[in-house]
Length: 532
Image 1 (cartoon, rainbow, N blue to C red):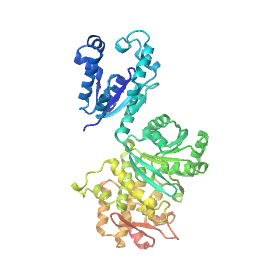
Image 2 (image 1 turned 90 degrees about the horizontal axis):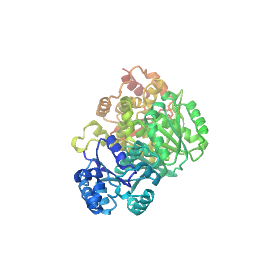
Image 3 (image 1 turned 180 degrees about the vertical axis):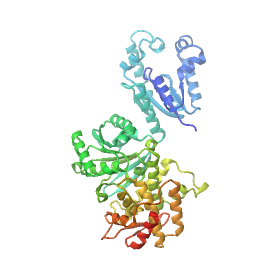
Image 4 (image 1 turned 30 degrees about the horizontal axis):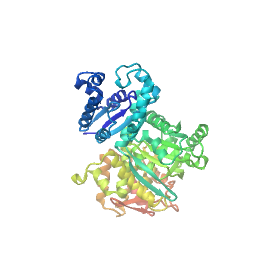
């Protein structure tokens, strides 16, 4: 696969060669130093070329090499300090990839160059004055490069990381899905490497740089927080990392109280964003804390699990559990921004990833039959396999369509509870040892069986749903969960109305129906089938 070049230009001593080598090593690319190639081809150092042939001859060699390298891909290129002064050279190399100008102060340049005698343009006394004069002479050409990085105070590794992040951002702008609700809107951004750029995205969304809090869990923070915190600081934010305990068992009011105490200690004010870095539990708890702290502070969702990406982070619902049931205390808190970085899933355990796939299946059943069929493999050549970002985007778009129509769960939004009346009961009875996605998977199987019993859908749909869930290694049976115990757990479900349970049941792929009066004997019969 070919990928665009990364071209580093700028004045001598700004770090082009050292940083370029580090970038190439990290990305597994070839590194090209234009000055080194010219020296190799000429069989003599650049200082000798200047002395024997003159600067115009050297510049002609640079021009020819620029045109040659512009035909290549997968390279990291360090240009000479004057190689891209001509607009034609900038255009030629810039068309082959991402062009980045490295900058540094005069003091930093002089310190890095030291007493090197191989810089013909700096020959003679008064090196500082010569550097200042050349920088002024070249300023317009350097400033014509769209992307700039100041390397003052950065190590080579730090500068290389910024180059990589910038190149990724420029080379692959994130997918943007707008979400509208009464009184406002927010964007959902989906793109690899987005977590490290979240600070810039937050500033772009209108959030005020300054104090903020990153709420996460220890394992997630260890894997993901460093890049996020560095990016926030670079964008002018002053982040405090606040950790909460792992697990659904800590999705409770005690954890919320602990977060509030941490927000006070960190000095958060009403403009200070709270960033939820983690899965659905972190998003729900941090979101609820953001909703009630100082009567509401800005919330940013940065989901790191597939389940949170396609479901929990979208739509503004937050909440915590009580011993009697899931999410019995909560609030609607619309985020200012949702940033989905699929690269964070690389550190997600495989069983957690599979758990999230249940929500993707649910999205297909609710509003995207083609997504369901692609996951089944039924569409064959009619539709190409979905990349992970595309899979996430398709599921997110289903939820966005629903929550835009019904932002406060007054009607259509209930469709998102497909499988959840059963699933939440299973989770509660398991003492929350059952993953949410596993509960949803069992609930999807139960809801489809109930729909078939009530003649709402064709019996063949039961086989299709259960076959797909099984192929994804998700549970479709509930051994050990007695039907009467599950019915009792459903009695505390927050979705009940007038003492009656509400079930969302499928009529077919992409079509669901809200049912308030499902006969209890039929529900018990389904529960008994799954428990067997």
